Image (cartoon, rainbow, N blue to C red):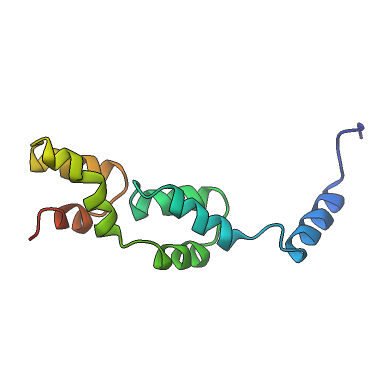
Length: 110
């Protein structure tokens, strides 16, 4: 083993200690991630957090506390609507950002 490497057992111990000291908190990370990605839909947020090893339970909890997906879709699309962009194009842009079809269509409901 070189000077920079540590054993798997040592890694596990350090991770456990960090979690016990609340230095690693997946729920807090998920909440901060959601707050920092308000221009993304739930599907994209779920995908990204899952790929980082965050449990679905913690992701769902973070999303429950976040602004509603339809409200976020509306905020993201306001500028596009004001520019007169075609409704279909706006919906497609929202879908590509991970918004649900329901949230994307809600932008055009009165």
